[in-house]
Image (tube, helix red, strand yellow):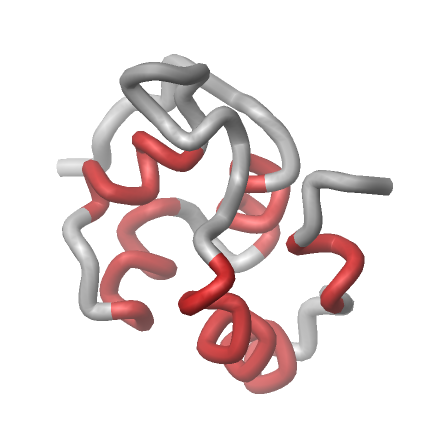
Length: 79
């Protein structure tokens, strides 16, 4: 059963949704879906929308495989 999305902080929320949601991205990254939920939560419970950099390469590979247009700048909080 999917975890309901309560917080939608950027860029994490948009990236996760563009790749099929928390369940799909969590499976790709071998993480619990609740970990991705924390990426979308404000501080101090979450990362404030920040996607940890150690996951960027796998996310970009996933986006390429799914033919979803994502770039490095889409993963950064500074735009």
